[in-house]
Length: 92
Image (cartoon, rainbow, N blue to C red; front, side, top):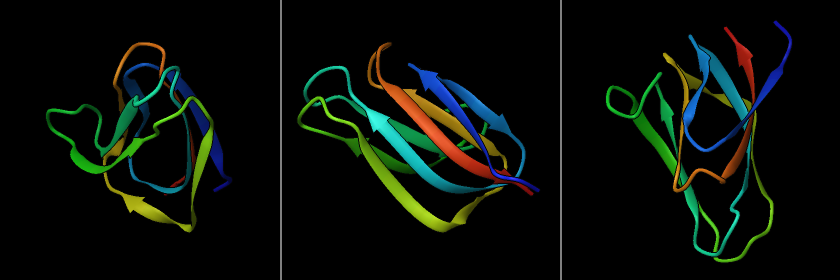
């Protein structure tokens, strides 16, 4: 299957189902913002993959090459409603 991407501002489920996560691009709208990324469709039932945090308002990309397997989906929990997150993934 072809790679896809999804962008989110704040919190939400970017994809439901198994996939390979290739990269995560994160932009905090203010200093010391963060986002938590989960393998799952919500933060309560999902398994936390990582926390991305920046001390300045700048865009940062985290590249995972061939991809990290997520079993249930991709959920992002932004620190506040203005945190921007883009995920590149391949459904499997």
